[in-house]
Amino acid sequence: MKKINNKGFTLVELLAVLVILIAILTIAIPSITSSLERSKAKQLKAKQDLLVSLADIYVSENRNTVTQNCYLELAKLKSVGATEDDLLDANGNEMVGYIYCDIRNNKIYYTDASPSSSDNICP
Image (tube, rainbow, N blue to C red; front, side, top):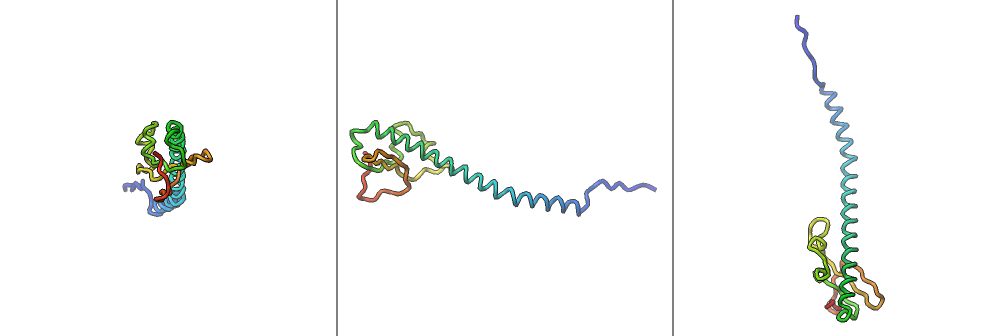
């Protein structure tokens, strides 16, 4: 009589492996997702800091024309070396916002707020 060769996995063993994999994935996926979001937020903050530095250079080079508090459009930063990539966010979309130049207090910062009609736009 010939012996039957049973070299395989049982249904119970396969189900046990699937349960373990699902448990690992339910823990890993949210962790990876939040890690990616934190990374994108850090990248956005770094780009905003870069744009503020470029705005500082712009204001220094245009000291004669920028004499009061004003909002600087991001596109104007190309004149001081900003590249197309510098003006894109982590998802590849064009950044929306302005650089507010507070000349009186010698501060420059990035803002998402659009200037009102009474606010000055930097020349």
